Image 1 (cartoon, rainbow, N blue to C red):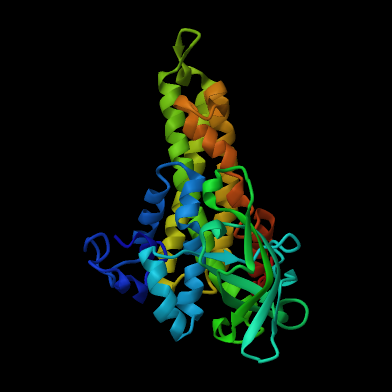
Image 2: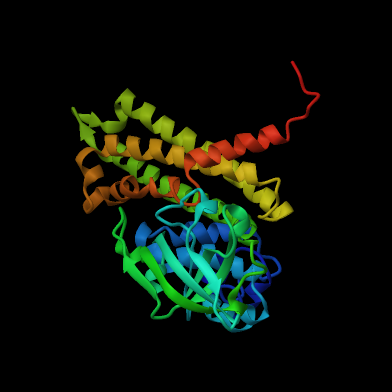
Amino acid sequence: AGLTAMGLGPGEHLKLVPGGLLGGVVKPEEFDHFHEMIVQEERVRHFCPGWEDGLEGGNAISIPVILKYGNEWMKKEVLPGLIMGDTVSCLSITEAYAGSDVAAIRTTAKKDASGENYIVSGTKKWITAGQYSDWFVTAVRTGGQKAAGVSMMLVPKSDQVICSKIKTKYSSAAGTVFIAYEDAVVPKKCLFGQEGKGFQIIMSNFNHERWMICVVSMARARKCTEETFKWAMQRKIFGTKLVEQAVIREKLAQMFSALETVTALQYEVTYSMCQKGSQSPLLGGRIALLKYTTTRVCHLIADNAVQILGGRGVTRTGMGRIVEAFHRTYKIPAVYGGSEEILADLAVRMAIKAFPAEAKL
């Protein structure tokens, strides 16, 4: 069906899907980010966040690096298997020592005596889908300190790449792991581009990743709101429907207005991506604001939903299952892909940078 390929956005990779996208429903050359948005929304409708991220989360944020920066052998030998779902990849950047501060990574890659291989040593943490991955799109330090010493390489699974499961707030089906690279031998052909260019690769990959996080987060928030509204309409309290209580209507109004406001911003950003491309420098600040606003709104919706459902909102089974799952997991997107605070600051700093010198009160 090409679901993995469509989850990566528009591009030539869509032509690798045999039989066409969804059996020919949409042509590769017609596919845009609005089509992709629908795919992302539908894939989370099961409301099993851990399973959903384990199934496609790793591929969705790592394969774009191969598409944009991979050399010919990667695109010929690695990419087809990933697109068809025969193999899995993950994005291996975060460390216990470096989260949003990507330039602080400590994992090293040094040339061996032959000069034909890198020896990768270090650790990574909270890597989605790492448990299932055959390929690890990995940030390493090949040079000096800070951003200038960071490179990116495609590390194959081996006995020297050891993955240990991490139990987080959502299901272990996400395949979230701690990775230990114990002198893993990686051929030099696995380097993306040139040494010292990894930081730029990482930054350019963030726009699409953050947009995707926003899309799936809002799809889950909308489903949570829908379930809450249904409950308010059917639950009776003090002899009348719950929705007849003014305080409940106020909470629903907060949820409705916040949801529709962020959805409008999401559509505007998606349209801009279709016109300018997801990596446009003009979109960095907009997408940062979108993600910051999205995760703040998810906080409001999760809190209000639990208050309205009461005990059912904190019960993993039954009529409150979706609300409980949303409340338990909504905070995760506020951390990965760039934390709320980092993205809010990024958006303002970009506005300051573009501020016209002649503008005064």
